[in-house]
Length: 221
Image (cartoon, rainbow, N blue to C red):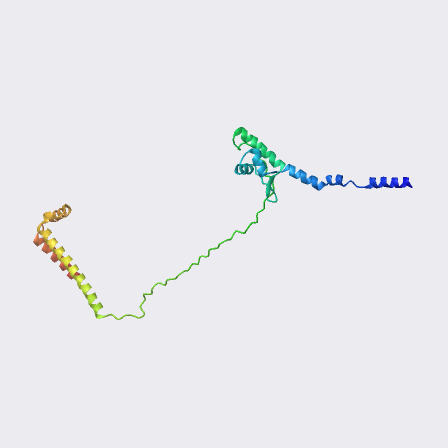
């Protein structure tokens, strides 16, 4: 009887689960510990490199790094921290960021809601105004007034006076050149001289020739 009770107590002790070991082996706790170990906050990075917030973000911009957000805090993962360390060493050596190889963009992709760009359409109304040309055609035939007749007569009289004045001036100038032949052009002087050199004519012989011509025309008739 005593042996049976002792065996039962041993079996109960062996079958009792060790809760302390199982709590330590919780996979969720392990993942959380790994995540916390592989991420460094922005404030910790500032202390690590001994720089301010703006220079730190300038380096992250150069490396095309986007921070991970957990709650209200920003973190960098292990790969991003490796690039930041490499850039920090490069700056200490050269004094500038340029020259350090820029990696591919890393971190979460921020998707911004695209708002449609409002389109403003300006409508210009064009008005075409048609202007009709004035019509000057008389509605009825006008009768010729006495004033118009007098105007026409005055025009004719003026034209006649101008023509008469032109003829009078021409005759007066001709008389002037007749009296002063030396004022004529040389060409006209030569023709006048040529006309004065015609052979002399016997008046009786010239008269006989005229009579003979006249008698011949009478006999033919």
